[in-house]
Amino acid sequence: MNAVRPLVAVYPGSFDPITRGHEDIARRCLRIADEVIVAVAHTATQKKSALFDVHERVSMIDTVFADEPRIRCASFEGLLVDYCRDAGAHLVIRGLRAVSDFEYEFQMAQMNQELWSELETVFLTPDVNYSFLSASLVREVARLGGDVSAFVSPSVLNKLDVAFGNRG
Ligand code: PNS
Image 1 (cartoon, rainbow, N blue to C red):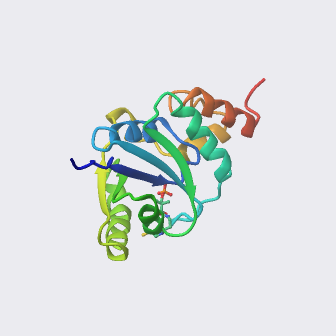
Image 2 (cartoon, protein in one colour):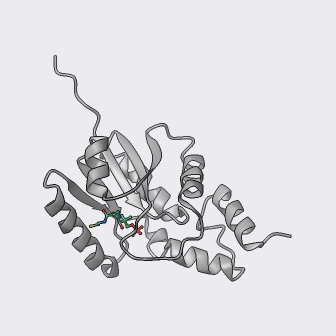
Image 3 (tube, rainbow, N blue to C red):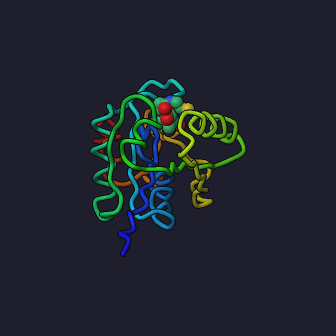
């Protein structure tokens, strides 16, 4: 009898911090993969100034998915394709919110395919309630004292409050 290997998907990103939209995509991944690795990149293609360091982001993601044993979090340095190859994952998941995401996502997917032809990128759309949501907007709204409680998990909200001194 052949042992069937679990289908592992990598969901990479900056996740600074993880939003409800990211959460939604990661949970949707479980409909097509047996296991999902939420992979926090040390090197992002689009340069952004980080709010949380990679270790903090991984710890927040671990807390958010504490209820789901099929989702785990890791960080990686270097190329995504190398990380996927080492992890035995031939599937990358990315969220696609709007047409504006398309060019950047399409370029990355094709470059990754050039770098490792055994890697497939699958795009998932988030729940319509999260189609406007991005980590950079969450950071900006939280920095300016706005209410982001609908956009992130309570544990992430706590970290944002601490980071921006928004409490008490
Ligand atoms: O959430 P982001 O910042 O849009 O995620 C982009 C990410 C981290 C997936 C991308 O920058 C990436 O894969 N970085 C790892 C380095 C790499 O492989 N670069 C070449 C991408 S074609």
